[in-house]
Length: 175
Image (tube, rainbow, N blue to C red; front, side, top):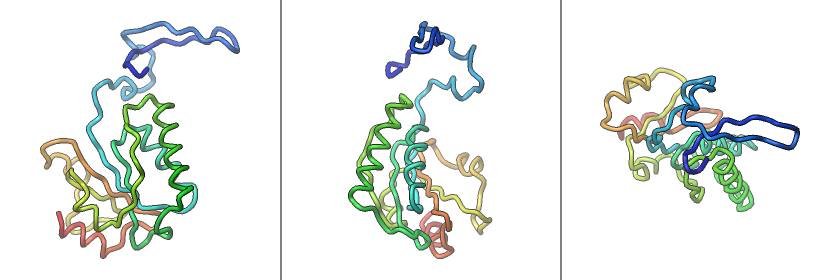
């Protein structure tokens, strides 16, 4: 729950659930990550605007995963270059619901849209960008994380079309 208490749950009937406090939730979990209790390091995601309802799924999943902030970006391959006011309200509502549903400690923040080149000045953390093919300065994520002092990072993720070569060169030339 919101106070980091864990419970065993049993379904008693169609409309009744029994909750029993537990100190060892790991005994009943199917994976080890669900038992992770430490704070998640701050991660900021710069997500290129995608087509249609994909942005709603993205904001829900990243919020539930505990991402500190999601900033939408425009890039050469983004078909959409911004959001209408009602779209921003919808994304904000989805983010609030995702925080409630997941019990995440993520703070709901205003949804922002910036250009991909502005990420350099916007990010307080080392920046990584994900690309579909090898480039001159390519590292796998594990290698890249070994070269930074903390796990506070920003990640740039392209839209369906990826990140253009020109944008990749700009990002690489700005570390």
